[in-house]
Length: 76
Image 1 (tube, helix red, strand yellow):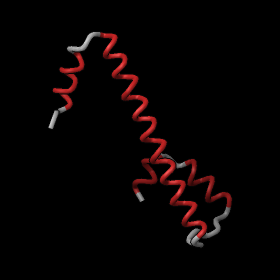
Image 2 (cartoon, rainbow, N blue to C red):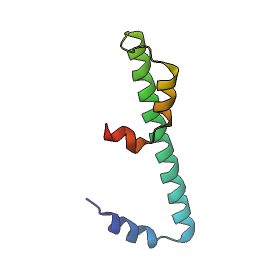
Image 3 (cartoon, one colour):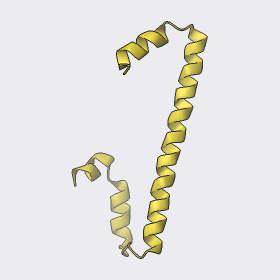
């Protein structure tokens, strides 16, 4: 398995234009992966809604939850 240091050393040996192309490819793949994660979450939420697994909540609770930082949500 390649380590991060090995990968960086390899990338730094590429000409600058190829480094830029590589960065663009990695950025686009990262964006696509994130889109897939969001879509999966949305499909799961829709399925839970249709299955009746979601309970009504007061609007204030929903807004409060949306305003919390991801770190706060992870602590629960």
